[in-house]
Length: 148
Ligand code: DQA
Image (tube, rainbow, N blue to C red; front, side, top):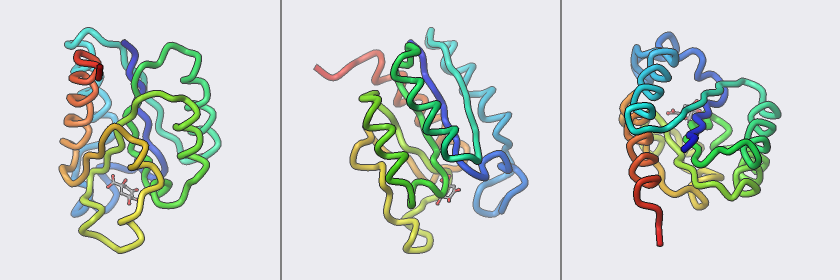
């Protein structure tokens, strides 16, 4: 299957940005790790990080027709702001996992609400770079055991 891994704004700065919150691992390291995990399970993976909301939305639209089977997304701050991102994901009808490195529920109140969580298969947050690995694991398990 094809797994699309999406990262929203500021996640290009992982490893440099607020290391006490987000750790020292870079997005390049995380993506290499995920590509390996997907490949070991017999899947293809593709990656996009963007700071431009319209590019993310257009990539999600393309996923409707390019053979994408599953999406992992760390939407960054758009989690808490973007009805447009929610609508784009809903339009694909594809299963997705929402993930965050930090435990958003232990942070400022404005991070407690997500426009995506109720339409996601599930949400993973609070495990740092492991949140990505756990999300990939969830995708691989779901693809192996689709719901009846
Ligand atoms: C984040 C949490 C968001 O609240 C924040 O805006 C981010 C990163 C995380 O991975 O913990 O940019 O999605």
